[in-house]
Image 1: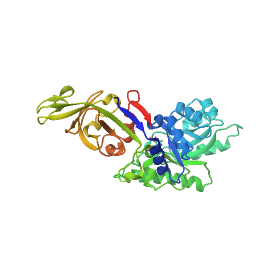
Image 2: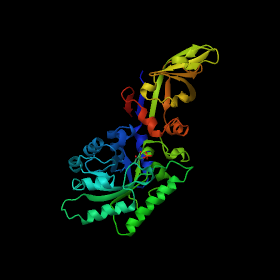
Image 3: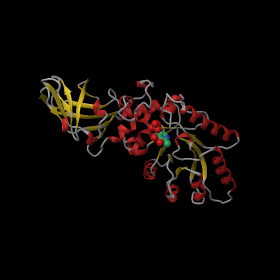
Image 4: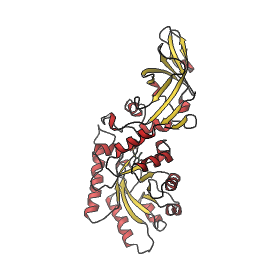
Length: 357
Ligand SMILES: Cc1ncc(COP(=O)(O)O)c(C=O)c1O
């Protein structure tokens, strides 16, 4: 018996279709497709008509090209390996004015998306004036081989926040940039800004935008709680097994360093073969696990094991589910365990058996 990380392929595709609807989606596949596996994700997304992908890693971008010869691939981090970008036809961000002036000669024949910094301050041109400066300098550049400005984009840092006005502020600032450039006659093949939260908040793709740049919803988690549970479904299951059930008495300490003190005699603790070494977060272990359709409290977390307090109905070899569509990653996000992507990224794919069904 070993703990298992498994994905139901039909449910993954079904969810992606439900998220996509009739919109044009750029699927974010960074970090090995949120740990779902780059090869798997590209294959499934392609099947349902998504042909545009973005990542932060050049290595992943090259791999996407190998998997999908006709896809549009957008690299969200700027790199300096210009020949590889040309060879694999990878689009790339323009991260700053200084990067432009330093490298515009090297960027020839590369498709570039101008990035607007906005409130996140992670990357991008600082103002519409900087964007226009690049556009005008590029227009006046007489070289026969120049970079191709094909896109305009930003990233919202506050779309998941509802109690502060910052999403509205960054959204309005961005729309002003887009509207102004379009009204002045600038044209872009691709305009994209929205992560999952913004895509749901706006009920689809914003005006003038060609794509929503969606990640976590495609992987089965709701970016915020008020989205109906059945509009996004989780195809991932993470489960271990009961190795044995032990009985302890009131006052017994169980687990390392007094981790749990039994509060009653005849306390039944299931010893389960999954722990933080497999990627179960300490914060997640403050909650429950699902055994035979019922939730039981996790009492202590160890590297390769956990204790779950159970009743007489639980026996050795019963399955212990940490995550599936009934006990979802997003439920624990909303309980403060950590971001959806943080819980997914913590999974240890070297120790868990990985299965696609
Ligand atoms: C630049 C950028 N765009 C889009 C996304 C997708 O966000 P989400 O997974 O919330 O849809 C991310 C994720 O972190 C990102 O960094």
